[in-house]
Length: 202
Image (tube, rainbow, N blue to C red; front, side, top):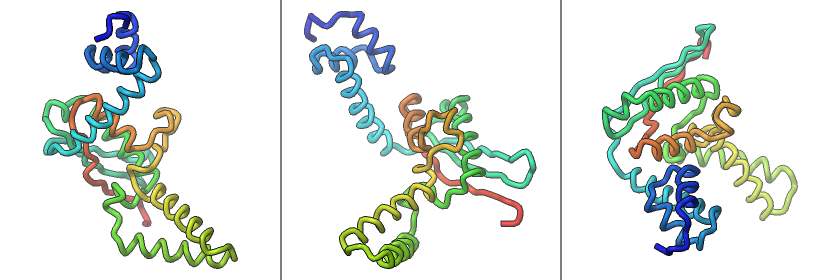
């Protein structure tokens, strides 16, 4: 480690990121003492760690539920993790409840983009292409319009892509960003496995 990295900077970076002491030291050394750059380096490394965690089996977890006060809309969600210890953690249970409340309100169709069947994706894309063709724009522009509408449809239909309905409470984070933060905080692979939504009359 470079001797010119003050201990107070390491302490500040640790407080701001929650990263380990040695990781903070090496990030500050690598960034030449630049705090913002060090934070960015730690974020990139954190994402790499999260991706590695994603390969580990999540075979413990909880089924949580939400029932709207009028009794007409409800949802159940299975959220999995790696150990029973994390499954019993209040933060983990709270995440499950927040996802269930979101599912009840936002009515997503799929958990992740991988869950969207090819035929559904192709059917939507066909509709968007036909709509764009009817707007009299050049073909290259039509393709971009259809692609943009497809992206928006995936954002609206896929649970992990959706911004939590209580945006103020969760600072505009998507369900995936909330999941990734919980995964980073617990050090375990956290998976939203499946959900079911029930609404009277639907």
